[in-house]
Length: 218
Image (cartoon, rainbow, N blue to C red):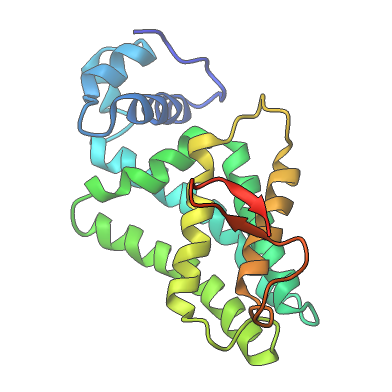
């Protein structure tokens, strides 16, 4: 098992970096404290001098990760911004957080379910607080007419967050598109979907689906 490159001067931070990589590669249940100790380069007993348990380590990773995403709450403090602008900023903030550490984001989004109580409840409350930011933005958009009044806010938020939370699965810092470009494209797509549907009838140049399942110009 290869050792992780040390990114910080703190041994606790080094252990966290290793745990993020191993949890991402093998899952929380597939990683032992012995695995972490070996990758760090210390004896298993020495690991407990820095971290009391594997679950405590996972909780720290999840809490720190969600706390980074929660910085998006500041968009609600920008008085005068329209709901669309607020949502665009929230989406940009989310993608920026993913781009900073895609591996951590994957652990935060997928491994929190392995937490026991009361740690699990702590993670759920933080996730709910994050979702509430989007609830407030979309409700404000519905009230102002920026977003369709027909929207089910709960489903709309799940749709937006579902798309955003999938980003670390495919985002690559080595890709041809920057995180900013990705955020703008996602914002364009998601915001468009929240607006009132256009009037019935085909628009010129709209795309229809042929019987064979291939798109064609209508």
